[in-house]
Image 1 (cartoon, one colour):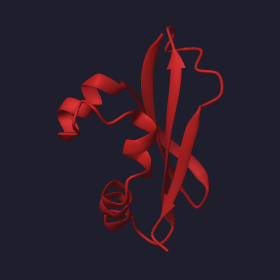
Image 2 (cartoon, rainbow, N blue to C red):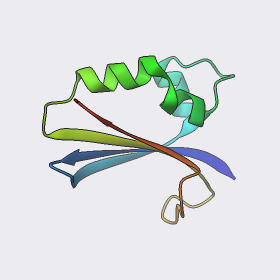
Image 3 (cartoon, rainbow, N blue to C red):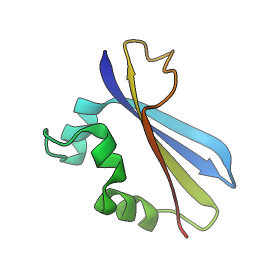
Image 4 (tube, rainbow, N blue to C red):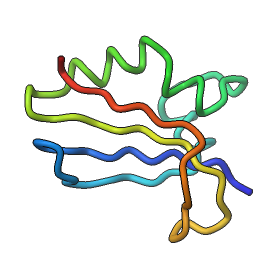
Length: 86
């Protein structure tokens, strides 16, 4: 099973786009320490604050962690957070 991170971008609560990444690749790109698991990364105050700063009032982002071997069948996330400008 791979750990996947999915970032959902919403406008006025409606899904606009999403990105699915293997968490290891996301860690390297975002310079997250390899010891930090997905659920800790998306719950991290610095991560949340950095996302929040990039959002407009009507935008939000949901970050979710999944365990799956199939990118097309994610199932339920084992951890998710929703971040808005407020």
